[in-house]
Every structure is written in structure tokens, then in C-alpha cells.
Length: 139
Image (spheres, rainbow, N blue to C red):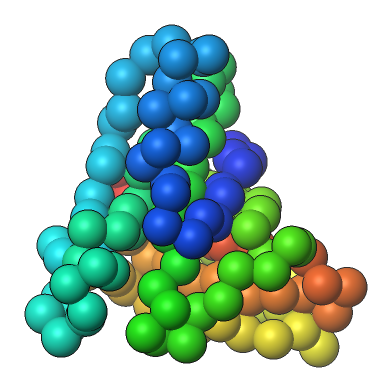
């Protein structure tokens, strides 16, 4: 299983990642804007260009990833919710096992489900306040 850090920012993800890129080198493997997601046509104009997902390989098996919060969807950035542990299990069953086990007595943000980008994904805060993402990709 791979584990990658996932960060949240309040509108300056791309700026932060250009900085990280200047330090780590490499190229972004994804840089998606909120306007590219279904159902975002009603977002305020200043939020449409926010980053939905960006990723930068920083080592052989490590990818630094991030997204911007979306205030109009009720998101707020507080110290402590700007970091997730992103798990990438090797099967859908393992994704469910990890999600169900780690989220027990916690707060589910997004239940495990197939997403428009093609992955099986869910996110939650565990009972100790640690934020997790489970992301299974069949490829």
C-alpha cells in the first residue's frame, strides 16, 4: 500500500505547489481546476479557478497532493484540517476494510463510492481527529 501526504489550502494551492516544484523538481502529474468537475457551474467565479486536485511526485513512491477548499460549499480551512493521510490500497475490498475500520466512531466526509474521475474514493476524520482519504484505482 502507498501512503501520500494530501494538503488543503485556501485558494493558493497552485502557488504553494509551484514553490514545492521549485524545491523538489519534477512535473505535475495532475493539475485540475474546480471548473472541470460536474456540478461546479454555479460556483462563484473566484472559486472556479481554485485547484480541485494537484499532484507532484517528490520521490520514487511518494506523491505530494493537494486541493483548495471551496468556501461556497461550506468548507473552512483551520489549522489541522489542511492535512490528510491518503491511503492507496491494492483492492476495492481492502479500501472498504480500511475505510470501515478507521472511520469507526469518526466523522465521514465522503462515503466510499465510485467517483467521476474513475477511482473508488472516500474520506473521513477518525475518532482521534486525524483526517484520512482512501483512494483505490484499478489501474
